[in-house]
Length: 271
Image 1: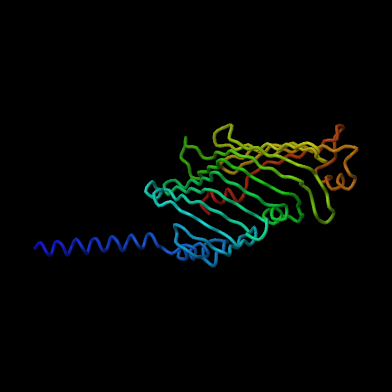
Image 2 (image 1 turned 180 degrees about the horizontal axis):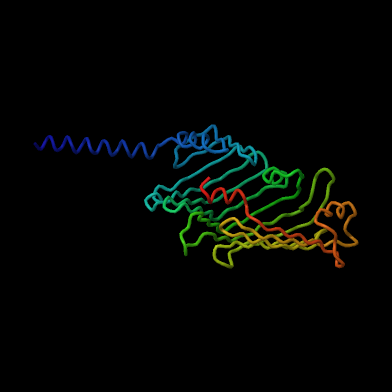
């Protein structure tokens, strides 16, 4: 009888070791295959496991990148969260480089980005926004925290944000080069479930601008923009700014829009 018990114990231990090995070395390619089938992101040339690995070909609506790495915490799964450190970009150029810690709650679907650093340029931003303008300049974002829970219950926090965005040498590179200046965007959640973005121009900007965007967790937004023009503003640039409407007596052009972000609402409704 004792021998039978020992055999059962050894078989049980063997199964545990086998299952642990499957979990530890679970191929990332199996997860990536599902992602490729069910999204507009295509990840190829994958190496490693779901816990640590990289890919050298990532195709997204915002462009193609040749480097994606991840390092996932196994302990976070015990708390019902997927927590991973991500790095995405182009190793051979400065088109885009993103580094962040991403958390996803298996309990309530909350998404959180922490310590996010982004570097890119106007060319990539034009592609990401899918606009017919060739933007210019260098863009950096330093984000302490972005938290969004699309299916929160009443009384729960849905949206929280904190960070800064800098756009140096902002302008247009095509069809006619235009230099606007240098701008800074500070964003935070002064009110619950609301993220406020404040735009200010830095010194020596050819086109001084100030603006405010309020974004709610349900996708509703309210945007205001004021652009100052004057005698020193190039005529070609003033013509380009006519889409904002005529300037007032102080040389300011005002723009205001409110509505709902369609893509955000699509996610809230569960796709």
